[in-house]
Length: 307
Ligand SMILES: Nc1ncnc2c1ncn2[C@@H]1O[C@H](COP(=O)(O)OP(=O)(O)OP(=O)(O)O)[C@@H](O)[C@H]1O
Ligand SMILES: [Mg+2]
Image (cartoon, rainbow, N blue to C red; front, side):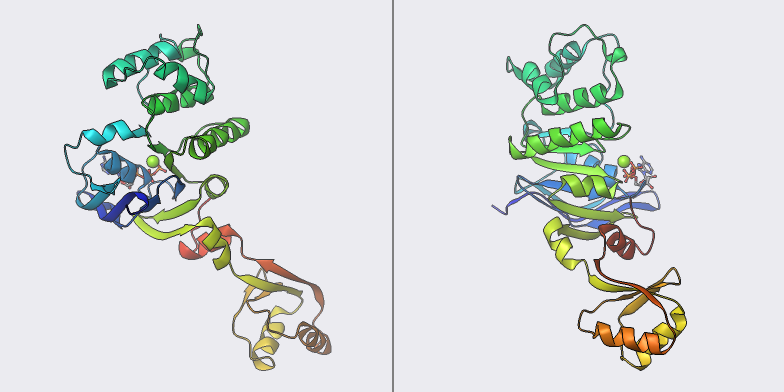
């Protein structure tokens, strides 16, 4: 056992001349929540569709539950659930009735399957409301109930919080967390919002123009985030010059024409302050800071950022 629920090797999808997914090596640990983060058009949905066999890969390999996922694969679907693009529910049927239809289509026979899935997602079992009368949040919940009816171990959720309000998002987050911690499911979730993934996922994969730029656990990411000293000064050019000439510092950056970030704590702050004052440079603040996740992603996506 590899410990991974999903592994891809050089997974690639090409549409005519465009490469939508480019040699992606994904490692989704069993029992964890993995967040696939990327801007619109980055390739998130295409990856999920290939993992589900909803679209054919151009090249590369997919290994799910330590088994090569091949075209025409059938057995594996009893262990996977997905919410990729909104399922077609009947507007004039209730949630329960819709799930009954879906259960029949998908061969879900367990008696309490529908009641249990609705319970998990917080929807009523006996309700007169038809799907057309559902709020967006209820529709999303029903889509998840549909995805988990057969109690899969692995769940793909493509942007499950799309269109929800703040409370809806918080509720969805709670539901996803519970499915991971209480039920032990492995969950692959996609989003274009960094803060959302940061609050939810154990591991993150950053996809940009079809390429996986970074794959890491959040705890490792925190270690990678650089700490720095932040000086707020007047006369930024003169101050930078002094740092280089007098203190031999090169690992610093300048922003907004008034802040200098020094990426080292191995400097004599008092001495820098003194020399700045001698040269008529006013220092209006000194702080120790850590790069935010946003800073970090801006850096790895070449300034474009995510979020
Ligand atoms: N059926 C298709 N035919 C041609 N190109 C496609 C097709 N599906 C997706 N693409 C292209 O592949 C790229 C990746 O699309 P994909 O839908 O995977 O991105 P995404 O990360 O899910 O974006 P979003 O956040 O907008 O959902 C895009 O440039 C898209 O236009
Ligand atoms: Mg998408």
